Length: 587
Image 1 (cartoon, rainbow, N blue to C red):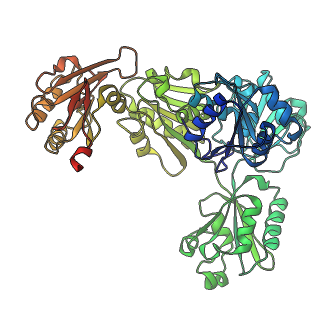
Image 2 (cartoon, rainbow, N blue to C red):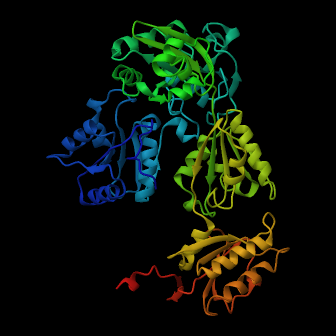
Image 3 (cartoon, one colour):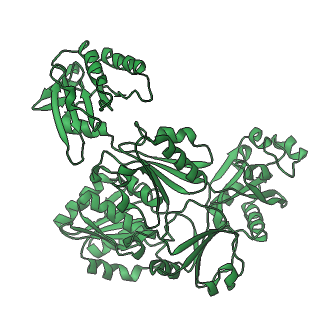
């Protein structure tokens, strides 16, 4: 399971969890969580009420091993704003249920309940309407949100027509069919039916522009703006902050869409600039003067070049990653700012689904599938996860042999600005789709790798511990690699006395390569060297077969199998294949 102490739902870190328990069973459950989560602590106090109040005040989230009614009565007087109150999960005495009581999706309680459930084998209980029916909450996308969140969310849930008007294609999660997505300039009159205002129904706007609000509108603020900033040494924070505030307001831009401040690296320690970044809650990026000097700007200055080595700081820093200049440099007595809009970056998640069993699929893989609006993959792999996808997800499935086409399609969708998940079995980076996809991906998209349990690891766990020492993965498929190259690699592994995991070992049309590889290993290892064959690891029809180099019948092996050839040190102990780590040799 993941560690919710690492990051909060909105991306904050660390995420501290206070654990409150009163009975012996509850304390036992709490200690299990504390052992798994480094930032979780059992809160001690004179009474359970005091412990619960202390956890509420001092922690980002609370897991209470108490009755729900008791928690409600104690915490009710402390409730404030759901955006700042701690998430609260309640677990019953027998740890059968983990109830997301307060903080729902925005506060992280729903995700926390799932994490608690995974560790305690409890059933997560989520009553937040959007989460319960598989829809993304408008306030859970990681972007600032303004307007009638509850009302528009209810309209989406009720199936009413909702327009999502974005000023560009952003990598949003999948939305249900009653949400019609349009790419258009943001409307400026909320009462205008022509522009999708209240007379036209419910709407979601995705824009960095300041727009009027009404009771039927939500505005999502994408991270699209970069503010370049330069200054004289010792610029007051109030002056730099005020200059940027006025520049954004005069241009009709929302400060909630600021992605970062940017400057020359000579200003990395400028207190006034750092304070400005802190005031807006964004990072400060700095660049060498030579990098900024290479950026084409409309208003270069030789005076600035002589002072810092680049003809522009504010405009060049704002445009360092491309985009369009919305606010040319504007100055106060000691500061200069400029603002650029960067184009949306698509998102490509390379997701390993594991060897097949649902319980070997990682929570991060599930989260990425639900984060995507487009999912691409082999048809039989997509069949394993269709029930995990959100309503409205676009699925691009294809059959065996179309790996390159799938990779190109996934990259193209991400380059168009969408949130894409490209799935494969095992780990996406091991004989799977990550490699061909990254050959086509460029710097226009953000790439997220999601590790998965490989077929080799699943097979190893079933056999015992054959990978206890050095090992190598080899594919015997010569569809893309000449057999002469494969044979050389097999020989190197055999000579190096490495445990070998053989992928793609034998098919109907490639029925001799496995025998040839085993002969190579037999030339370097004793005939009683253990060899394991695992077919359909963790899937229906799973079969585990243990043999030796001398006795293995290649006819038992097919493309659903992984073959593990032991080293000269590998042994069979109590029916399990073990490669010693070598601890005994030290003594």
